Image (cartoon, rainbow, N blue to C red; front, side, top):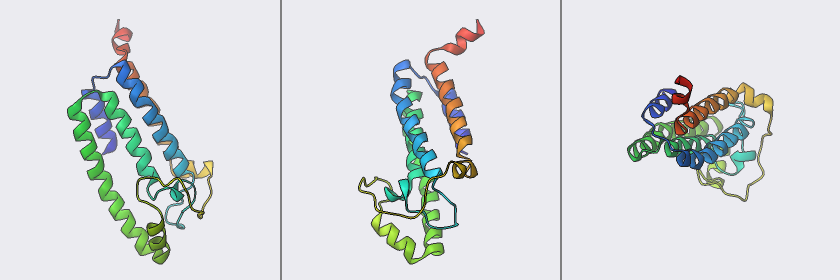
Length: 171
């Protein structure tokens, strides 16, 4: 679904070099956050509360939001920006609610304590000590490298659009 929305956004985009350079840092930071969180995340094999998960409960969604925001800025269309933000929160908001119910059911009081101590979205920069450690192998297990590659390809395509390089290639 998100791939289809990204491709749709690309086709309606009217990026400018300025919009590209404003959106690019958000995309880079968003992908760094996603890789960082993916290196800690061991899906349903234990409650991970260290690293980015000690700052907020949903660092993968924070990373995705920053990436999305970067692309919506690059798109340089107010209508796409508004619709894109709305769709992001509808799709991801439902996923967050579902995942938190699953985590509560799976980890009970441990998750409840974590939920009380760590904010959902806005990172708290006084992290608490938590369980888990970073591993590049876990990034691969979680297939975040595929997302990073897709992000690089789409960002490059936005750069080509912003600088009208597709036209230059066709000449």
